[in-house]
Length: 383
Image 1 (cartoon, one colour):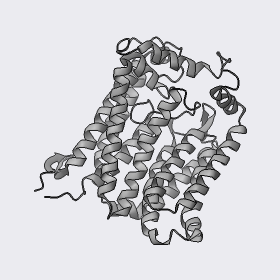
Image 2 (tube, rainbow, N blue to C red):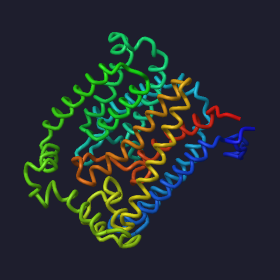
Image 3 (cartoon, rainbow, N blue to C red):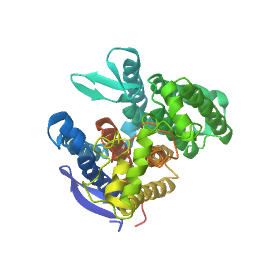
Image 4 (cartoon, rainbow, N blue to C red):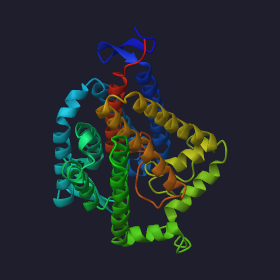
């Protein structure tokens, strides 16, 4: 048996696990535990205001994590050929559900975006699962048509039409943040899938133009961008500047070592979305620069492990492209979220993967990472 493999009992059966599997699982687990801890702290005041319990939001997130973590391990055991075979059906299904969100009364709006599906008292964000479907499908189509992608006709017919349709459905719900993340995922898959650079350049320009038009079409979004760009000097303290200003103050209050776990003042109704999009600010306030460095270090380590896996999968293009999509999704979205909190990007409503409060985001991220774990566990390593 390879020195890089270990036999363990996983969900009722024995199997060999690779060193890469163990390392990835360790980093994912640490991020998840840190996220649950900070959700408990950041959501406590909002939980009490809504339900007279400090723990209601945490209990909901904890239950979802308790179900999603074993689901991730189960997904890691699904053969890659099964995922490849059903990838297009999965993508079509998620697109149809997203269509229901933006075109029927089943969809609901939140934060200015129409991106939630309400069924039986539960709210689900289908666009999160569309990301997962898109990554796996791109792995399939780009690997199967690798030698044909220099043809613009083939690229448009078999790849671009589907990508544009998926992103357009999200933008129809006015969710610019998710659309941006999907675009980053697509570029990551295209780059590793060896799509010609001239196509990538044209797509980048087109994406920028469409995003600009989309932003101009929303007065609220335009005011946020204007405030971020400094054209208004961020004078609307009680309006568009409120969230970013209090996020900055929270980070400043934390200093090097933080004010202590649970001792944030910003979460007392000063910082909107404290347990969600701006949880990075609460981590900085309570755990300080030390805590933020540890968090960023975990994301960097996750990126390094996934890049190393991509390099080792040179002879397996489907798996290689899927890991690239997962990398740009998880780590790319993390740094978009961090950039928003630091004021480097306008507010986009993008959660911090594995850390922010939110069931759909957490489940989709863990399922995606389950696919990566499955790929890592089939990695061929020297004996």
